[in-house]
Length: 193
Image (cartoon, rainbow, N blue to C red; front, side):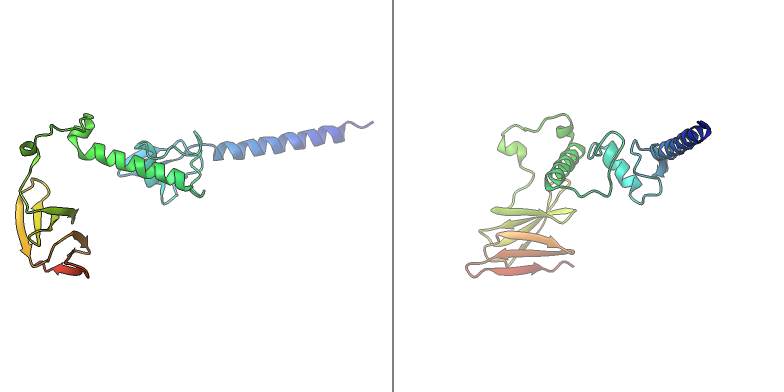
């Protein structure tokens, strides 16, 4: 009985196994890339430095928004169920609140119920408030006006008249729209100069 073919088969199998392990070990390593001038290493073996979303995935991971599908995989190509998306949205909103409020970072979400202590400014009879990113726009129902209030300090900047029974305000594409009037309602646009 010739044992050389058996040894040759075992050697070939061993070489194949070593080759597979070598290829797998190079795939099983995390990757490092530069994001915002800083060297970042992710624990995920399936997100390479060449991925155009590497820095976004790193930000989501390090901010606590997303943990990945396991300790070493992110699964960037997988579909996202609605329940996981809801968790991402909730975490994002929580983080925005924490970053945007000194009281929230100290977990002080309640302020004293003193009306005079809370009022930033006086407007007619507010129904709805919207932001254009810089200022607040307040629809005042009874006088049919719209007030523009500076968001940073609550200072009343301007008041527009002419919207009958102003109920709602919308800021879109740099324009301000106001809804109001008896049935049928009207849509007004504030001309900003």
